[in-house]
Amino acid sequence: MSTIHGWSTRQSPMVGRRGTRPTTAAPLVGGMVSMVVLLSACGAQGYGTAAATAAATAAATATPSPAAVESHGTDPGPTGATDERPRLPTGFPVPSGAISEPLPPDDPTLVARWMLDAVGSGPYDYYLEALPAAGYAVVGRYPADQAALVRFEVSPGTVWQLVLEHLEGRTRVTVQTDRP
Amino acid sequence: MIGRILIGASVALVFAIGWASPARAADDYTLPFYDPSVSLSYGVDRDGRACHQRDWANTLWNDCSLHYGRVYDGHTGMDYPMALGSPVAAARDGTVVDLFEGYGTTQFGTYGNFVLVAHADGRRTLYYHLAYHGVRVAVGQAVSAGQWIASSGCSGQCYGAHLHWEMQARSGGAWVPVDPIYAGLFTTNPGRVPFLAAYRRESNSGTEVIRRYTTITHWVEFVNRGGRTWRSDVSKGRIMLGTWNPAGHASAFAAWDWPYNWVPTVMDQRSVPPDGVARFTFGLRATKPPGGYSEAYNLFANSLRWFDWSRLGSFYVPIVVKTNQTE
Image (cartoon, rainbow over all chains, first blue to last red; front, side):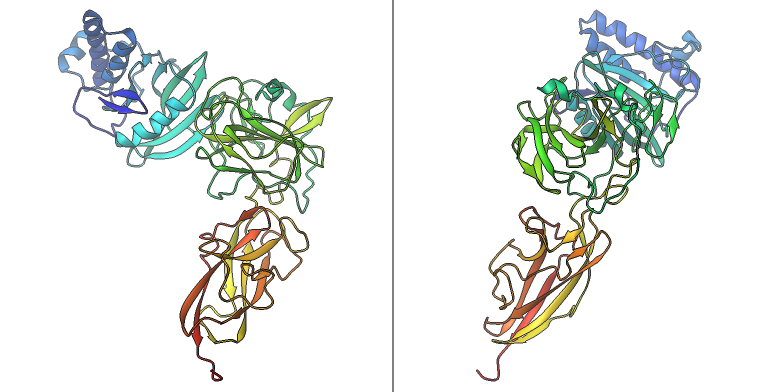
């Protein structure tokens, strides 16, 4: 866990592997299983909900075990992910306290979404530091009044974007594939 | 007081205005900052419907997404990313009619620090998200185009340090946002920073050899890459050449024709528009002992701003002083 802008960053416990391309359904489902397992485990150990769900968000990016795939089939996970949806790369920075949000099923460009209990420059500045620190080059930064967009290279030649939006006193963070 | 400046409150009124008559004037608006590398984050949404966005080029998006470099839904101004504390410039001559600077530099909230400037053409410009106590002007004060009026921040509704710059016009009894690009209100469309120059050539790009106690004439030309017309026939804001490194030092090569010992000359022409070429002719008189010297020069807008010397080609004149035969 590292600290950037006073926030700690949770990353996937799996081996760091940046630049993950969109993958097939099997690893995705495995990731969902990991998330469920982690949620349960954290709850059992008395972690706060926010921390647990942040870990779960990161865990959803992890490479699953074959056993998990077998036992849970291909149901979409709690983020609303579909078969076509790319996965958040392993090690992608997620601030502690992030709470996972479901994704609308009709937009396959959405990768992951979570809520932060912070507003304004904090979340934006966090990602301007955390992305390069995690190995993702920032290729565009577009601050605005109630939202901001940060474009980053998720793998050589592939740009994704991170949208921060002010919603009722909190910030919704959405990772999505490139969109004009 | 601050309530009048709530960004976004007048979104519904944006569309009452006719995006009006492009009438480009010689000394119209420039970008409200000095760094030419700053690029637009988001412009004005010219479509009043929710989740319909139209930018200055009439491109229409029927969604609510952020379209970086172009527009986002309901946006009433122009967002320019800039580091906290960056200088903010008046986009045109005017008078400060309102301001507030009491919020924290990165304090998020409904309201933020701002300066509001009224212009002679009936429009006014708003500079928003400014730094805590970052305002350098007072209400009622006249400001000149290109004058440093404030330092940027991220106060108010702000995700990431930037300047929200908004042009407003009176329409139907209310102030409504104007898209300056669409309306063709920049001196150069799209806008440019007020003061910027590029080196073009000089009378001698090599070393000037001067015999001691004699004077030679040197000239240098710069292209006006900024948004303002350069003028030499005004007091405030006229373009002059000054000594540099350090700025405004008394020169050891000042000749009789220099206005001041740190100002070799005023621009030769009366007026040079954007993209025009200006020449600066001045004498160099050697009084120093024989040897090799160099002196750097930079342009400045009188009482307003030094130019960016590096973008001006880091102009300097190498000088060799030789013994005068009479010595």
